[in-house]
Image (cartoon, rainbow, N blue to C red; front, side):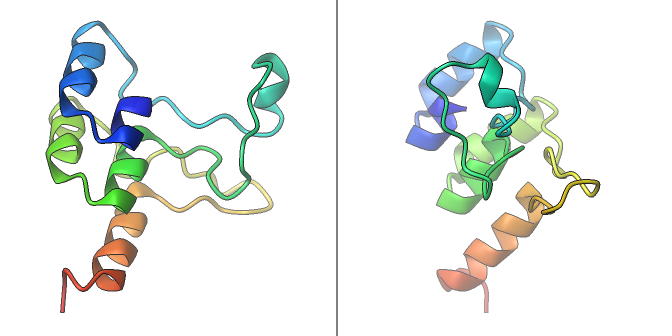
Length: 102
């Protein structure tokens, strides 16, 4: 996920080749109890690497993640108080916001 956030395509490939989970999620507030030092943001809980690449326009990494089986629905949950946006929703919002789609 950090490779996607940083836009490091080479590191993303290395991590995926080493078996990294393509759909690993940002921890929830409840999940942070098992990850000391983690301070999750409720706005980004359940986000996956694909979500972060979508919001940053990292198309090469997004393509790599999709080729490796990333879920376009990401970790979105409907059963929680706040529904998390999917990578697909984030991508479309970002493209309109930055004028990539007219």
